[in-house]
Length: 199
Image (tube, rainbow, N blue to C red; front, side, top):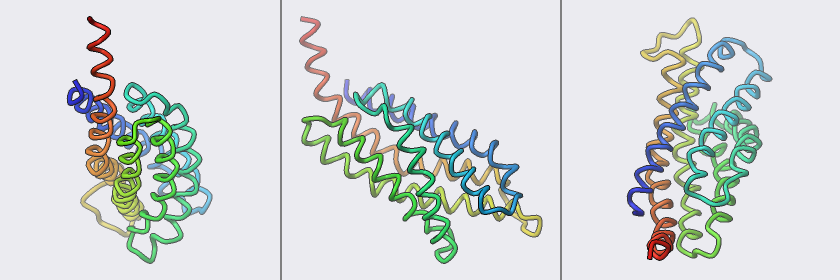
């Protein structure tokens, strides 16, 4: 039972992040050509909305209290992207790890609240920070690739859309094992209750 929930959660997480990445890529692509500091914040807000809502839809069947995931992700996204912008230039795009850390911390609080009295789930929820930070660094690196591909002077193997989609997939590949494990651990407690209800 727990492993089935883990597989279902992994699939939903994959679909949610790919769809969010595609939505962001389509919405942000025209903005990549605009050289304005404020446009960066518009893209940050779009990313927070796309990923926050999609991830919330993927997580809510498995966790009892993640209703604040979308608004927390949207708010944290603006700060995360600001930090990433400040540090990515000197770290060749990998400064996204710092930006991702802010969003990861906000989301970890929500996962910890959802764990309730389950000590193992609570301890595992703190693993979200390194998983999300590494995934965020991959995503931000690909976003910088998208900015480069949008430049008329740059020849890139991927289009800006392709870079953002690859970044979304990279983030998902890094974070999906964590989602699967946390859902499986949370599911181990609900399985006996489900069995008792059938007796």
